[in-house]
Each structure stands twice: as structure tokens, then as C-alpha cells.
Length: 304
Image (cartoon, rainbow, N blue to C red; front, side):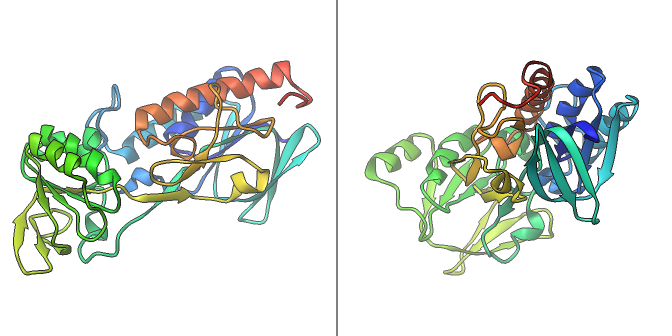
């Protein structure tokens, strides 16, 4: 085998896994296409020790730290296919090459699907947001909105008043029950049933939304729950079991980030219903150390 562990995905989860393996002096290859999910965000918040730093800068520093370990290599490119080969795996690359490894860590993340609404895409990650813990504080208690795609909007709308006066735009996507309406009112949430027609202001900032009846409602931020899907079909090729999450499917893992395919581990947004940089990094630490233990205690991949 070319490597002890192949890590597919070079963002927070993948590089956290690589760090554990590097410190165990294992030969690690990290595949990275350079398209992390958080690339649209100017700054990252809530990540201990990195609050207010740009995701790109955090990633660059992590890669620099890993490059100091002689057993770690990086390859800028995608994995196209993966299959079991004996007690390890063979992976085909987009550039036509192949690599082999005894273990695999999947950390290639998910992609977001956004509503087709004028002015929304160019504001994603700046003033159109999904996580109030990540970005809500910086809105400085200015008016915020929740764009409903389904009933999950109720949960977002109940939380957001702690970050600013909140309007829930239900449109045609969600009709709150009488009990939910009462709960929303108790939190001071305004409910607007008229659909949003467009976002206005100088992007990527948001000044307001225009409704289909022509009314304009001032907002500094608009929150929504994107639909998500794995960024690659490698997990499906390997036969990984998937679970349904609140925004889309994710890989089922156990407490060590091991999946149902022996020798394969997963971490980050790909393997969690809760997208969060700190959670992703912690899962990567677990996946990397679990892959190392697997090499020691299950070298022939006979355990399930």
C-alpha cells in the first residue's frame, strides 16, 4: 500500500484527522479540491482559539502545521472512485492516477442547495446565513429574518430573537400551528405570510427584502436551512450506510467515527446532522485516532 491512511477532504475535519495520524508517524495522504463549504464566509466564529479569523486563513495555518510532519503529503485533486482491495483500499483520482491505503477517512463535506430567489446566492455566507451561533452576534441586534423552506423554520425563528428582532417569512412553505404561533409571539417573532420576491441592497450586504405585494421590510440578515447533499459519491461506492438528517443525508458513524464499512471512517459535516467547525474538528480528531487504532488492532479488517 502507498499510504497508511488516505484522507479525502482537506478542511477542518480532514486536517484534524491527519494531525493525529501524523503524530503517530503514519504515512498520510490528504486529498483536497480546495472548495470547503465555508469558503463563502469572511470570518469564522465560535471556533476556540480562532474566533474572527477567516476560514481560508485557518485552513492555511493547519496545512502549514501539518507540512512540518514528514509523513504527511497533500494532493490537490479529487477522488473519483474507491474500492476495497484486500485489507486496504484503491482510489482512482481525477488526474488519472491511483493511490492505495490501508484505511480511509472521508471528510469531503456536503454541498448546499439554496432557494432560487433573486439576490440570495451572492449574499450566501455574508448576510444570508444558516447558523446564528456562527454569524448572529455580528449582526449587532439589527432586524433579522427567517426564510421558511419547511417546518424547521419554526426552530430557527424561536432561537433568533436572542440575536435581533425577528420576522418569520412563511410564504407557501410552512403554515405554523396555533400552538406554534403562540410560541413565536411569546418570543416577539413577527409572522409574514406574503412570499419574499427579492433581496435588496448592495451585495454581499443585505438592507431589506421586497415582498410579492411590493412591501419592503428592512433586514440586516436572513437565515434559512439549506438542503444538503454529500459533495461526492465515494461513500455510496463504498457501501456506507446513510441516515436522514434535518437538511439531508449524512453518513452513519459510531462513537469512534467508524462507519459500517470496516476500515473506513468519516468526519465533519458529511457525518453529522449538525454543521459546525468545532464539532467537525473534534470528529476529525476521533476519526484519525480511530483509524490509527484500527491499523494496530484490526490489521486484516475482519471486524465489523
